[in-house]
Image (tube, rainbow, N blue to C red):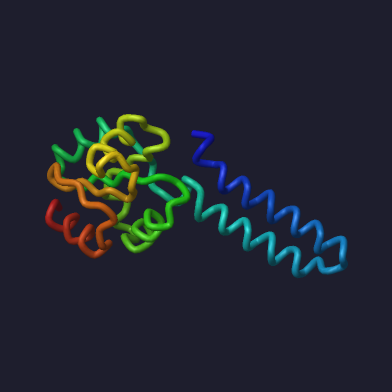
Length: 145
């Protein structure tokens, strides 16, 4: 779990250091704006942006019951973030598995991608799709509803 927070914490620390330097040089307004920018970047790259992750086993079970896609992701992945943002509200209908928190999820991604942990990997009806178009994922969601 701590691995998921490394990038956001580093962003906040770096922003704080730069802001401190700007304040000491007499630019408190620029320091506040820059610190806010770093805090926003940290928030976007944190696990807080994504719906609650579940285990790969639970996600596969739920997907078998309701037919919704399973998305394997990891914090800090820009492609995962792009998928999450472009799905909008419908992202809450997808079963999300954080591969850094779930070793079985990471193993499933490696099995689907020839040993690589390439994310986002979306599994629909047992078939993996690597970094699919968000519109395609929304279409799969509408079919399962």
